[in-house]
Length: 75
Length: 400
Image (tube, rainbow over all chains, first blue to last red; front, side):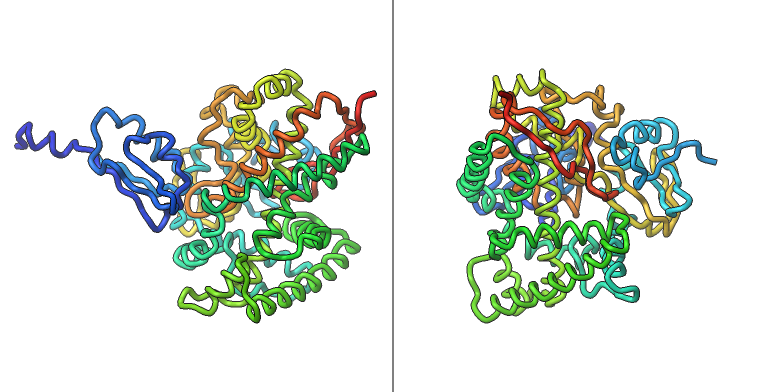
């Protein structure tokens, strides 16, 4: 049996970027600026790899709208 | 047996494909066209699922369009080398990375002053005359000039580029008459000779343009063959011409047909970017894309069988009520985000940033003029292609 503490750990969201796909379209930054920043050299920085639960809705929207489908959200 | 007669070559469908798309979505989300050997997919969720899954749905089907083009020129002709829109990863990933550098948001943003300059110049010219044919006076020359400058070729030859690009599109996606096929043969020869010439010139003397960058890639470890360079120039000329031309032209038709929406953008020019998105959704310049199923796939709307060619109806997905409330209504105030006019995933339109910027600048320039202009032609003749949608001409003259 899992302890409640372990379950909390499993639920921690994680953001993954497939950098082979990402072309810095910056939709994610528009939808969730708390977690994504597109740099001047057209590269994407993930500001929060393990973001706060309050961002879940925005992050899911960013994943859905990414033109290149380069984002993944786990848990 | 299917009740719905979906024939993308049918003149009535070309004029207005949306009623048949609606029936397809409601009655047969996976529809089979026997004569063409096609599975037609029309719902948003299914279209997205296909575009997101290049491992199950190969873009080799798009390559066949170019082969079809080649066959119009010569019966036993085969397309040489790879094309960006007709390959799958990992070949696609390699080609895309090389060419994408010229189309990133920051590289495109730099072009804004030049796009404004070309736009203003074109508008001034037809304003003086008091009338225009919007396609040849504006919607065609603007994107051709800009893509020619990106490639690093002489924009003065834009009429040839346009003719070559029209002819190749007709060969691959229309139904050319014997006379047209003869003209296509000549265009193909001229285009081939021109590409060889310009690639040779950049090899001898590189500049800061895209063709020079492609030639450099050819010489470096990021291998690009001469044939791939030729195919890429060709795709950029076609994609850079036809699609943005149609975006601008379809925008004008939609706004002229919806005076309330036109009044709203005139009052509030800040709505123009949203209007561009809504045009892309409502009357998508690229109506469909093709894929070939590599395996059997169960989509929410039905089953696709291994080896089937799939017509992925982007323009129908963009009208799907299941995704966009009142999808058949043109409404620039709606949230059109999530439309698939530029596709989705690995083949997402390389030129989307350029298209959006050109669309925005074009609308900003023309929209304020529209209330003083009237259409002289009442009927719209559409381009002969099952792939792209846009009018052949829009005649406008100043209201006295």
